[in-house]
Length: 259
Image 1 (cartoon, rainbow, N blue to C red):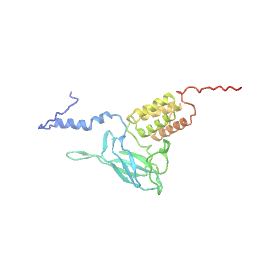
Image 2: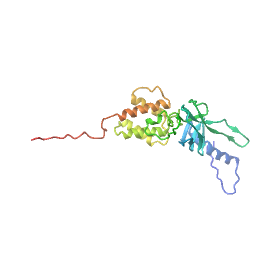
Image 3: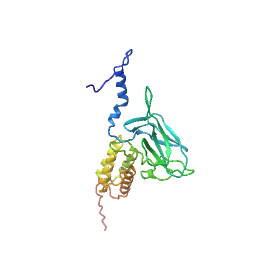
Image 4: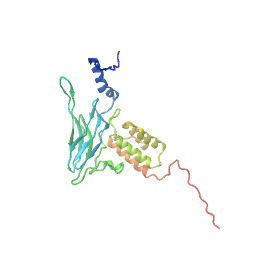
């Protein structure tokens, strides 16, 4: 059984059907086979920025229903203050076929529906007040869930094995702030370093097991928001720790001699 064909294309050669099929398989199927078992979500990129009235979705890759879709050019959509929760979604249309190709289209949509439907991926949500500008930079880890005038990306699904997970930007922010406290247990430090060393989103299962081990109890709310809120609590407790780092030696004892 032939399992791989590499076309040898040279000047003047005639392109055969088998050669074109091999090129198509390499271009479109190889990566998709490697993503077997992954849940729908963002694979890479798709970062957001905003001006006074426009949200920009930058280039990236999205995994949807067993296929990879590329956003090759930035997408934009106008927005305005509503003082109610508004959700930005990436919506995929059904395929369209003709004699030569299969076509797929995607569009940006602003809606008040916080629930992602079929072939929809949330990119952010926000509640913008009149006269305010949408923030997409954060002061610290907890600032990411600020209710008003802030781009909330907690609910955005990132493609991961088994189930979608949190953005790498969020987990990396958690790891950095934890390490900055300077008084971590070895277990926490190792987990944070693993997050920083990874070039992929951290699986939801790993985050859930870390939370359950740290809290010594089962996590009931395993959604992105539930995981984020628990990480926030862990970070808050860690920042409140007054004990010196384990790597530091005991404080010196001084003797005072009086005559």
